[in-house]
Image (cartoon, rainbow, N blue to C red; front, side, top):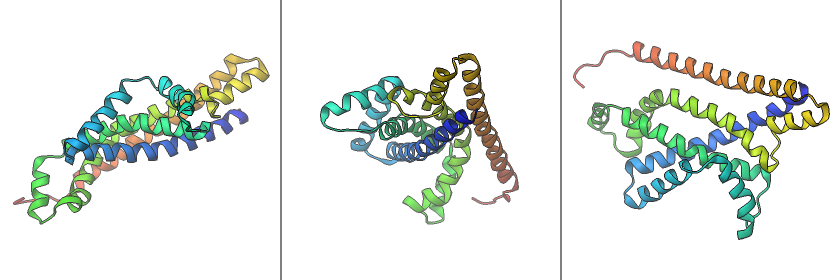
Length: 216
């Protein structure tokens, strides 16, 4: 179990790095679709359809084993982080785009009535409201990302699943080892789910404590 928990620490570090990069990619693509013209929207839509329509395993193998033929050499860590980030960034972009669409039109008009335009309007009014709507699907995307890290073991990136396979080779006890692997994945994902519920509850309390507005 100590060996598996050591592998789990690698999985958590990989998941955290990919979640940050995927969130940045997703938010950028979502804002590009929302506010950009066709030169921005066309590449964004092409990226979304290509990534969401291709299995993650195919992308991992393609980037790691095919890309070197173009002269680009990637180690397992770089290849895994890049593929996972761009793959889940496509799904997170739809999460953020849906959250932006969920903000009532009246909030946009109220911000403009206060003299806010462009980035100040987004940062001070729209994004805080959109983040509340984005919490449940965003946490779900993070849970899926954690489980997706098991796929990068095929390119030799050491994490929980690969640690489990190595433990099985040494102990010849596949049932016990992978039962432990499954239990650790469950604990990580359950913790993320509970975190999401806490954030939802805090957002709901914020809505209830918000003073009534009149005349806007």
